[in-house]
Image (cartoon, rainbow, N blue to C red; front, side, top):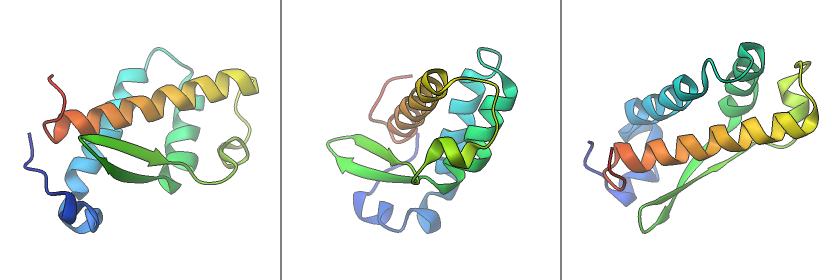
Length: 107
């Protein structure tokens, strides 16, 4: 667990880069094997690379996605409904991992 300072999270890429990378990586690993790897890689590399995590207060985090995530992902072998469901689960898992890493959630 990493000591968390909400003020430092304003400059998260300086103070918490390792923790952010760990949260995103852990979320990916949790979904790996459950969904098509082409889909997961497209979401990870083309959508989430443009995302921005924010601390909302009270131990809650929010991941803001870039505009048009489906278009950013490119040609992936799923329908829009499946894409949206996997993306939502990916984001939920990242937010959970951020809470866990910063001590707001039990392991």
